[in-house]
Image: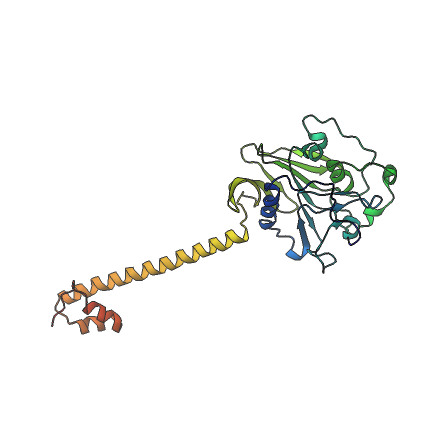
Length: 307
């Protein structure tokens, strides 16, 4: 990680503000019950170096999640890139946000006008997740002369055949379409989503990804957001704090309303007792009134208090 470049001047920057805000929302609403915060890493627009035989080859996803790795590199440093053969784990989820300049590469053979993709790099010998977890499967003998390949693969091919990313999503903010590609038998197969409520359920993570229409950072849009099995959206830290403040305010208002109701009941009881000819001192003793309550009733012009 310390030797490979984290920036490439020839690569364009972010195409729009959406590409900056959307990854933030993804990271801030991610909830993984099976993984503590010390066992996963998320990043956006960070170089992923994926082939030890071509160490300069890299891809830069808009957002990705890697599990069974610490948030800090080697447990102690902020990452400037993600080097798969050192980390020992490929990303588990990758999300690309479509733009006109990247759509063809992001979709590969799944693009409407794309022909089936060909490659001289056959699938490596590993399961559909991340191999045995120690990174040895990432540096085994190159299949089908991978080491002799001259041109780097496109994104789809790299994610599918090199990194073996189990869950790959692409989303277009222009059309509002979310597409989900799942690695099955070593190849991506597109999974059907409900057009009316497109939520993709990732069973091995126990989390869903869907399209939420709302305001984030002051901008109203259709955003990708994580949810539970029932489709309930997970909150950001800001939303959780706001919800907690609302609950505390409502609880306070409820207590105040109950106190006012008690005061009203005491006043009514005192009024009835005073009407029988009892003195205020007798009423205060009977109702166990405090001194301040007794003085308040004594000053109340609506009460007919005997001399």
